[in-house]
Image (tube, rainbow, N blue to C red; front, side, top):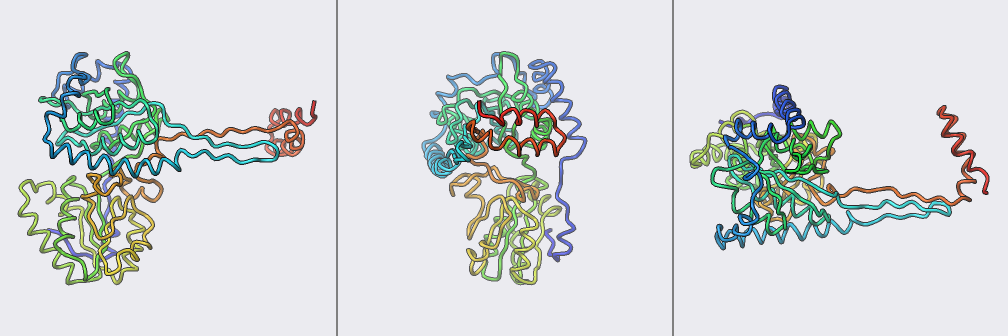
Length: 427
């Protein structure tokens, strides 16, 4: 079921990208929504979501939001409240530095790097196979901590209405604009707007299926809108030695594998004994899962147990692979983790399941597919825009006019040179 392989063979394994045909289909959706607006959204909702959307049911009513707390159990509300408090605590702390203004005197003038929250954002909340209120928590709390005032939500329409758990989270966040739109058409709607039904946003965030990911990547590449990141298949890489618990590791790999049929779950270990135990545990635990088709496909086609020479080699491979989730189970896990530099999030002696639901306080919207080499997990920083404010006195301008003119002449920009030279004399 899951192979035990070598580092060389593992390096040959390719992660899945977004196929060209998906981009082509999504490009068509984006173009149609931009051109025809709500009419196109109606058609795509009918085709993809099997839902007849109209101006009456497009937006969730305020009454539905207000009644949501009554439709979930006390224990469910308490659980959401705990997560809310933990994630909010971390993001509020991050906001202190993210929203700090930098100001330095330059000559007799100054330069200021002034932050401000993004004006209006849209959050995509998956709800196709299962509703994900955790995604709204992660994005919504973070945006609010940054000071974002206007937040809208798009989530796929459901025959029995939007999940009351999602609506409960929205109520806690003070979000009133929730639209029943899913897939690429939701990203298009938030990007271009829908006449007077839905006004366009400045940024779109939140995970989604491959069509949502493709749509986010396309609108971002066009320079129309800012996005958080493009989330590909979720993934975990685990570093473990002979001291690790094989049962835990197998469970963590399967927890990741059930995310999708192409979600990699990788174990790097220098212990052949542990490798054999984990292989046996994976197969045994798979047989216990009631809905194991997705996990089976992922384990068979995209996962592996890699036998390495030592932990230094594991660290090298992990930093090269740059996984979304990186778990460490070694005799001295903190020391091992201190050498790891490239991952969406690193978990020391614990599993990412806690993080998926905010129990550890972090954020589960993380870079995938090796993009952790240059991207970070979602935080207040993503919702902050910074502006340079530069002030120069007449004296400074006169002093620097000649040198500025020389630099402009060096680049052959005559008008630039003239603009500086004119300020060479204090009037």
